[in-house]
Image (tube, rainbow, N blue to C red; front, side):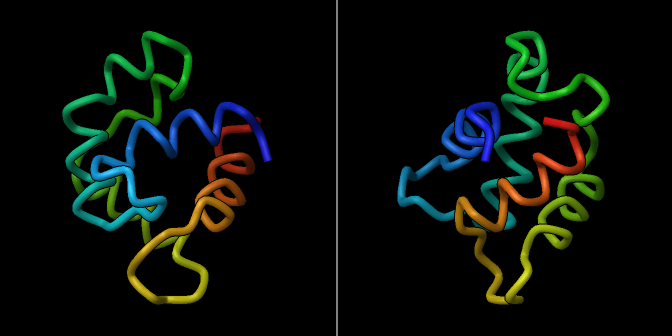
Length: 83
């Protein structure tokens, strides 16, 4: 799993509990997305609206428990973002 996935996960984990909720992903991508893209932590094309953020969350939630572990998250973003 890539270092970029780790940095992005940590940036999206607003309460720093080691898990991502749908609300965290949507909120963080909306508020931090452009900055993360400018820093190279997130591809520019990945900065989308709430629907796109929610779809990313759904794609990553492999076990359907409505929270993302780092492993679930990294598996999807590494593949989707080509890291």
